[in-house]
Amino acid sequence: MQLNRPDHVVGEPNKLPWKDRETYYEVQTALKLPWFYVPVMDHSSGIAEVFVSPKTSTGQGPLGKSIQATSELLLTKCRIEFVAQNTNYNYDSWSLALSHSYDPGKKINMTTGFFCADDKLNPASIIEHLKESKTLVIHPMLLPAIMFQKLLKSSVTHRDKLRKDIQRMEEKLRYVKGRKDHKPDNPTAEIDAESEEKLYDPSYLRYLSKALNTCKKQQASRDGRQKFWRQFREVILTAIDNLELRLSSDNDAKMLKASLELKHWTSGNGRIFESLEGRDINYRARIETQLNVVGRSLLPAIDTLLITD
Image (cartoon, rainbow, N blue to C red; front, side):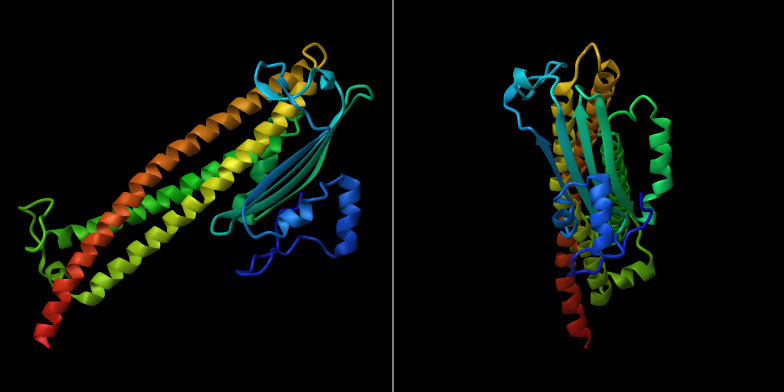
């Protein structure tokens, strides 16, 4: 595990955390990293991908869910290659590559990988989480599931900041709504002299407009990341389902139990993500409402400035 990663430069590919090419190939060979690790990590967007070999066709797994499988492949060996990268540079960034080998005939059930994280993510807490998950550590998707929860917490943090910014703008615009040319939320509210003067100051209204547009950009960033969390959830569940298919209820009871718990955990966090998207709809509407208030207020304020001049 590497506890830091090179800084990202806007407009340029990510700098991979390796001393040189030879060092990378040495580590890739030793850890059996997925071949597509470099192409994915060199991309500047959030992305997640998984490959399972051999491939499967439609069937049903031990826990009863229809997944990609055939009865002939039950209890046969498989290899899972998993890569994910989050590029949320304002809060945290990380990359993850895992390879899992399962061969019941040779009693092989081994996971190798590489994880690189920004200090803002607090990598030490992730290591502690792994150590404390004694019943789940046998499953190769434990670390991806932990990172999916970290992604959720990051989204909640970003949402809370955006909510406070919107509320602050709404409080400032409460006075603007109280002007004679708008219907006030509270008709009896009194406006102090300083606030009254600002109502007719185009520069102040432009400041409010700029602040609201910053909120709008933050919301657009959230909207753009919705595809990544869905993609990340999908590849985690795909890996869990494909490994689960090869497990025996008699010989792999602990792994099956861990599989079920990780599946419920990941699915539950996905539901929370979906509820956050509902709040995003509300935030978009509130931002647009306040931008319209500022836009309507700028015209009479500019007229007043022209008359004064």
